[in-house]
Amino acid sequence: MSEPSSDTPAAMESRTWSERRLHSPSAGRNKAAIAHELARILPADAAVLEIGSGTGEHAVAACQAREDIIWHPSDPDAQSRASQDAWSTECPGRIQASRALDVSLADWPAGLPETDAIVCCNVIHISPWRVAEGLAKGAENLLSPGAPLVLYGPFLEGEKTAPSNLEFDASLKSRNPEWGVRARDDVETLLARHGFDLEQVIGMPANNLMLVFRKTAR
Image 1 (cartoon, rainbow, N blue to C red):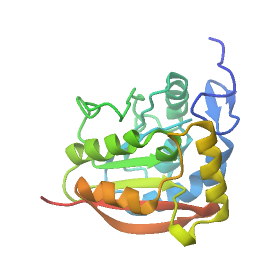
Image 2: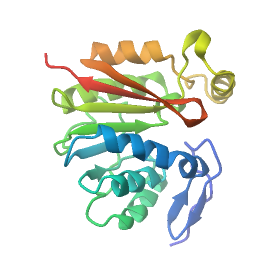
Image 3: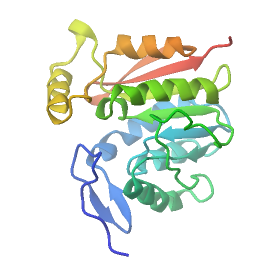
Image 4: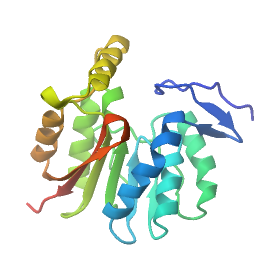
């Protein structure tokens, strides 16, 4: 089987292939920091659903940091899913076969196994807002009270917004007017509407944030 070209349609960077695995420069830089925080946040023995798993490198880092969790990667992109499955051999039995999930579809949670946490890194700014809306609605139906929903990436924070994130926002919108760095207030309002309270805001390298939401009891 020949390896695909070095760029996948959703990627914002050049990625390389090796042994059927995609390698992301940005994942290489930030996967340790993300895994470190997830190790603190995720429940014991959690079944974790990752939305938009990209190359699959974050799944490996998270599972190596927490040997008790089971990781369920997903992606709408077939090349990314193939890479995720190749990376899964680094953690035998703990990273499951990647699923073809598109969270903009109303029924995306149908048929998924029991899920204790959802993680979504670097997705909602390189997709239309309806993806964030679908993620919030599906997570409301999928997660039990107390379960975490973790978002990672750049966010707009009014006057506190880093200049690099404003530049990134403009660049994204020039590529696709439906993309863009999301306002943190808008994301919090959306998640609140679907039964999630913001529990933690964690500053991350390169002006990114990790937002930790908890499903409330209703």
